[in-house]
Amino acid sequence: MSKEAAQSPKSGKTIDQTADRTAIVAARLKKLYKNSVYPVEKKYRYDYFFESPLLSDVEFDAKPQVLLVGQYSVGKTSFIRYLLGRDFPGQRIGPEPTTDRFTVLLNGPEERTIPGNALSVHPDLPFRGLERFGVSFLSRLEGSQLPSSVLKSITLIDTPGILSGEKQRTNRGYDFTKVVSWFAEKADLIILLFDAHKLDISDELKGAIDVLKGHEDKIRCILNKADQIDRQQLMRVYGALLWSLGKTMTSPEVARVYVGSFWQQPLQHMDNADLFEMEEKDLMKDLAVLPRQSAVRKINELVKRIRKVKTLAYIIGYLKSQMPALMGKEKKQKKLIADLPTVFRTIMKKYDLAPGDFPEIASFSNKLHETKFAEFNTLSEKQIADLDRVLNEDIPKLMEELPSEKDSPDIIRSKMGAAGGIAKVPVPVANNKFGKKETAHESNPFGYDEENEDYWALQDSADRLLPSFEALGPDGGYLSTAKARDVLVKTGLEKDQLRQIWNLSDIDKDGLFDHDEYVVAMFLCDAVLQKGRPIPSELPASVIPPRKRSLLAEKSSVF
Image (cartoon, rainbow, N blue to C red; front, side):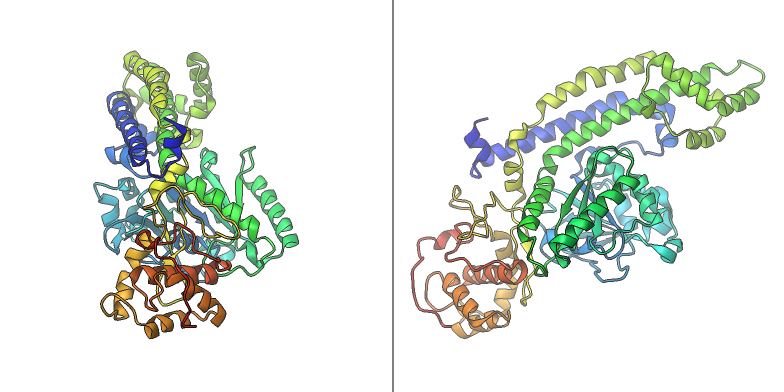
């Protein structure tokens, strides 16, 4: 692939090829699992001993998932709203614990909520395994469906705020940490959110972090609401957070911590505005490359699963081989369970296995008490050979077929499109979260794309703002000068700012607003109100509607 093809947003064919190659890899991975891994899992009851259900087709076809975890009032739901650029069904935001349920955010043609019981049995969604946590949990599970360019590529999972102090002793009615563990295993990215004013790690939060062991490579941390403290305080808070995480997380590597204020309010302290902007871009890049990395993640997770399946087969086969043919089976079984650490060491040395591939002894021992060794299946050398072939031959070939790193993040980000935003005006406007080639400088602080003449960064917002535009009663497709002026005045901006926005938005200089110009005006208002950005001297190329790019001229303002 040429450098030009990889970088050009016009190269839709390149984007499609990247998606097709990823889909092909996922399909072949699914086939490998069905033919070589699934029969071994079923034979040695992997789902029972490792408490991990057998994989279905939808597990391989699912979009990448992002799991958000944090104590109450750290801004998890606000962060999701910030990413989507809009409210979503079932949204609850407040200073006290408000989200009392797990919420799965999905892309769909219409806005609606999906009850947990329906979500867990939906044939096209990878949540069937949640049935094991019972009706009490499913009543606290909810799907939130809405049309979103962000959710076309990823699935977001909001979790209940983790409690602290006396509140954490309240019985939720289900095992919170086990549910978090289940979602963590399926997730492609796990985001831990912390409040700059609340760095204490409660027992329940520590328990949730503990069950993330083995998924350290997926974990990213966010120090949220960092604009509420000055630069010196931020330095101390950041150090304190790293110290707390070092004590809590057992991984020798320090987790990546993004610093910023991920909601739609103006920054309270502007000392670190440039830092927050750079941190946000890094985080958005991490999210944008997820669709491509999802295939890599699925391969990695299957490799880990195969290693565990192989180890389980050796354990079960060994236990079966130690059982007497006729008498004393029960006594021998009790002896083997009591001496399980020695059994594990023997199997490890005999077959040259890694300690990390063995199940946790206490949990495995409890499950062995509920089984009969005499009913176990003997070790199948052929099935073990099939697993080795998958690990040593088939998986490496699949890795070679994955799209190149050069294909991302720009190409994948361009496919994700631009997300919208919510302004402090009567209607939602665009924030361009996942826009194309974002470049910021003084004359163009909003980002633009000079290479694609047909690209419009505000297209998603234009579609969404059409009902509100029509509700204002346009005459022949145009808002009168008075109506357009009233819309802008309601934003509360200064008269001088409104004059600049009018001059930029009234592109054809006829004193009226058509739908496209209305969208541009709302975008500029939002940029000033929410981002605290200066009004540009001229519109960025990507913000100008394509059909109006030849109409720019100078005329007087109604302000």
